[in-house]
Amino acid sequence: MLTTSASTTTSLPGSYWQWRDQSIYYVCAGKSDPATPPILLIHGFGASTDHWRKNIGYLSQFFQVWAIDLLGFGRSTKANWQYSGQLWREQLNDFITEVVGKPVVLAGNSLGGYAALCVAAQYPSSTAGLILLNSAGPFSESQPTAKPPLWRKVISQSTKWLLLQDWPSFLLFQWTRRRSTIRKTLQKVYLDQSAVTDQLIEDIYRPSCDPGAAKVFASIFKTPSGEKVDVLLGQLNCPLLMLWGKADPWINTQSRSAQFRKYYPQLTEYFLEAGHCPHDEVPEQVNKFIKEWVLSEVRSQKSEVRS
Image (cartoon, rainbow, N blue to C red; front, side, top):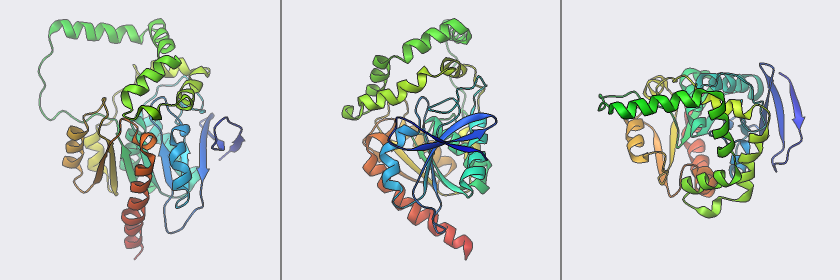
């Protein structure tokens, strides 16, 4: 393991870990406690460790807290690789094994939630618990869907083909990364508009200026479909906490909640007055739920295993 200190513009001091010859940025706060597992925070698409700024300080009073920038995001290298849930699963598992050194409670938002679920399901020895906040990821279709009209299928295929080309993808990236576009997008997915601050916009804009960022953006149109969520839940064997920002315009939280409960009925869940990123929008509530759940559910289960 090779780590070096990092000088950053964030209020959270971080370090770099070398993984497969790429620099991976991470943050660590709080002291390790033999009785309580550490927490590993995993951001969503386009975000970074900065998105957990409102959570790390509080949670680190009770736990050792780690946060990591997935390869391609934040201050980590923007490698010209094929990105997938499986790639980030390997990155996270290696980080837990090589850097943290003990099983963790994985907590992921959106894309980070799907990556966390992949680790928890397929690397149980690295996982003490799982927390999903408006998690992404596809379920298997349990029933056939209506066949789309031919014109819609043609347009969909044409659009996908166009975005697979370098120039259209690059132009879309340039438009998406504008501060004004970032602000408008956040205003759509945050219920509390006051949470959409200039600092938040800069935290998302800054990594888009890094070399290779456009290639990472383009890769989302080429990413192979990962393992279905219901399949992963069938492999899962750890405590699961679901925190839903119920005003999320991208996710039908009630319907998605029912799917999760169908395949993993023993989960615990709460619905919050927030949008797609409840940890940033209502951090006091999220921090409280995480603290209480880890101390009761996860630590008690760990004690039972020891006894």
